[in-house]
Image (cartoon, rainbow, N blue to C red; front, side, top):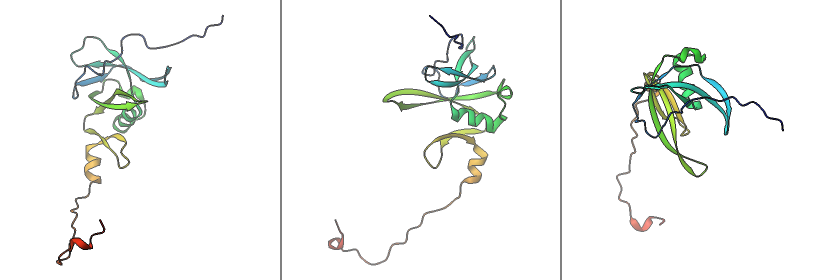
Length: 150
């Protein structure tokens, strides 16, 4: 019987369900892509504020995009950065799971125009917002309910 060598992350994994939103988390190791049971995972080690040991964490693409925007595209530059933990419950394959997001200081987790979650700079969001007031002008005439199509 032939065996293939498997490499993985040793140690405990972050327990997303027990960490409160707003908890500070520090990246303590380089992030590396690793093949896992569900495809490629971007694995790093993090230290949760108040914890004694660092743990493995899988960074989703939304978090990676935010880290790239804040600190550059080399994951070595992410080491030592303190981030804010945020989680969202979502439906994946008919099952409710907890998704974890690590948000840099000065950034926010929000939805874009298509409804996708993104991590973006608070400054950029403020610059992109346009202060508009929707004004609808109604005619002064009375509306007869019998003229309504329903």
